[in-house]
Image (cartoon, rainbow, N blue to C red; front, side, top):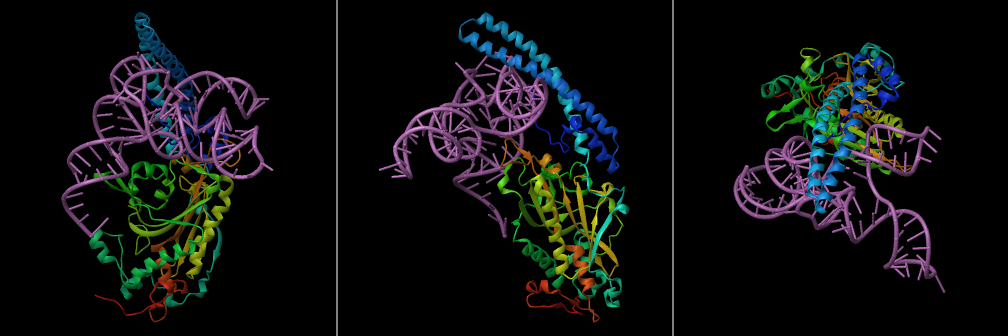
Length: 441
RNA sequence: GGAGAGGUGACCGAGUGGCCGAAGGUGAUCGCCUGCUAAGCGAUUAAGGGGUGUAAAGCCUCUUCGAGGGUUCAAAUCCCUCCCUCUCCGCCA
């Protein structure tokens, strides 16, 4: 008898029946091909129809089996044998239809697993990053930067001996930076700052950096981004691309109490990304690296709480950049540029005057119930009965490399030294700047 | 890594082929009773899918006793694989 495991859908398959127009409208805004959805609708209907048939047969098999037992206990072996034969025949037929149901369910799952989340109604329209909307810009005055601030961080890093890209390449290949001296301290200080700033509301977690395949699936990083992930063949483990992965799975298959929501978590972890499609593009210095440190903040919330939590995470991510004296802008991602799991995302782009670029430093996303449905995270509403799927939200409180770059470029002084923003002083053992001429061979 | 023992409902724990979605207990909720408290009595107490129902309730039905697969008319119970926990040994930051 084949069992039907609950499959991790993202879109509620019921919406294919009850809310198809909205599903199609949302996916159209993303620029997704709708033929797959039509197929899913068809698969869902056929599967449900056949499943009813199978379940009816199975009910009959079960009751016949019970009758076999009763007949044997009462000593009527002939009747028992007859019932057993009947049940066996029906069971064989049931198995045939059931394998068809299993096949349909698998196909449906494949389609839905690859279908992205619906964009939020208030996410801007648009097809690509060019249609993203800059909501506001903070602390940016293009005329306020001096010549001394126009040195890119890879040059500063080499001059001061705080960033050693060559040796990083020797150890691990390109895009694996080595930080040295105050450069290394700065990495740690930035993370410590982010953790300290958010400890008032977020529980600190130190999760594993290697996770199982199903953990990657529940956040939507697999199967779509197989090529982006570092995979340890021998143990079948994946190096996390972000702490979002373990933090989202922390409550996997659990039912939370509404009183515990929103549940706010943060974690400082290394992040590993193969950046397979990005070879040669914006990869100088720390613009794009394979391994970096990041403090991620994440929350499980009720649908009603989600908007407020989203705003809180955004405000916190902004707060850290402001505390570091950096210029940044907030970008509202359009429907066509949204990540597959997200319903609404604000990117924080920090201005790096040395390379004169806006660097994506944080992505603050609301996933509605997409991830939670895949990860099977529910809550029990205080009012009423049953369970409901939670909403997940997250954002980088601080991602090191690009912020590191923006800090050293923004705070570079005419003599080549780098002034440390006051917020970092507690983490630098009394130092208030990174001195010039400190390069080592 | 080696040897052994286990994984059952919110928790503890019984259950070696049918009468078991699962005894008993604890906890929780509701009610009764007791002038307070303690005790006592009774009832309820998993999740999910499908169907029926205007809806709620209810009713029918399927799935789930760590996960997956197998044997059987019938599996919590038998077999296989995997995961996890505990004990002992080994190794080790």
